[in-house]
Length: 482
Ligand code: ADP
Image 1 (cartoon, rainbow, N blue to C red):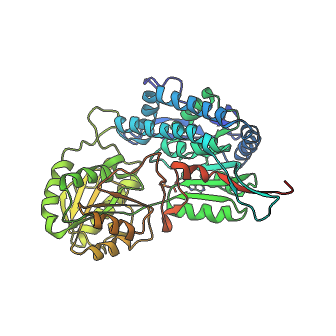
Image 2 (image 1 turned 45 degrees about the vertical axis):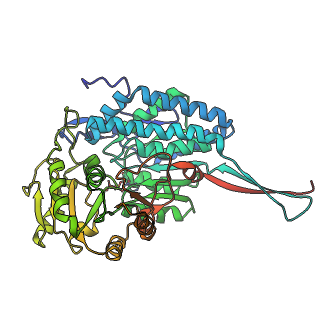
Image 3 (image 1 turned 90 degrees about the vertical axis):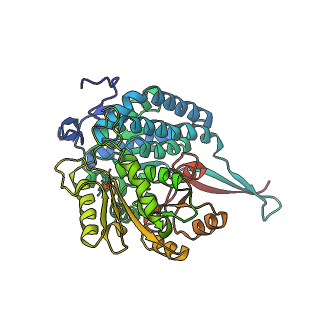
């Protein structure tokens, strides 16, 4: 490594406060999607190492949960400050393994840190309730207790933020975490663990186990000491983990795939809508679960909208995320590129037209930002999440028609609407079967709000005070004879 990574580039897993290798001595290789060069290796762990991590988490949480809220808050705050102090190194590691432009990586580190800051504060507000009792000599107390050991399984698209969104509330509530990061992006997770240790997170409270997803996942979902699974990733794996977790009746939080509609009505502020599409479609090269997948534009502004969007998309610069001026990095791997190409070709075969981009098949992880028009609901791009920089522009004429089409999916994560009408803003957002709606806003993620989906997009919420509750169990105590 010639880049300065401040000692945060770790090639071992982190269990019980120690940097360790797999029992087998085996490693798996991590590559940079921009160059396909090897960045480093991480231990290829399995069931045994995961079990040890769970046991150390179980011991650690029993001590940690007894500490005061103020103590937990102080340690979390310290972790937050260390993350902010090391933004440059963390962002470089993130871009090396994930590919996003360095500026976006820095933004993700700040966003990731915000969850630690917020839950450091929220730790002090894990309040209970006293309910007027049914008996004169009794009191009804409702309190919140930590669930215990949490298994966190995270994806590669936000290698930092998806970790802190789970660890922040878990630690604030008094829980311990065994994290399995995505195999493509383990180094950001390990760097966060190094800073957690420096901040005073006790040994065993935060463990990062790298390696075989199926084996680690089986132990995390099957081990009775794990009380909760928090997963962000594909709907297929979410369903599998939910079924596995059922055998020991664990609590489950799932943040799964989306197929976000982005609806632009005839009364919309078009400049604002273009800004919204640019961020909701092209951020992270289109690889977010809240990315606009189906852009519905009212007939009367269709031509004008496409022309203006084309001007903005033409300004995007594709390249290695470490190079200055790059706004679109590589996709995570070849399979991701092939999926985007499949969506483009399917749409074109069925009558869509190319506005911008290339139909040429690429042989690396880069793909030009592409716009296709005259897209219809029978094309693959309408029913599958593209997860790439392809803007598919549909048209519509009636409000009820576009609401029905937007809801015609098993997903229900994020939706966006652009209108100047207050009545439309309320009525359409209420009618959309989605967990989150952006009205005249293309970027809705913040630690202050409950993020999550309905239908097959998931269970539970991350962020806000609701995000803390996910890591607690409610206890009702009847105090009698008083
Ligand atoms: P993607 O297709 O975007 O990579 P996945 O759902 O496959 O999404 O991956 C999200 C996370 O789930 C990753 O950390 C991955 O290693 C993990 N994962 C994949 N398969 C399993 C499994 N069978 N058990 C546990 N974790 C898994």
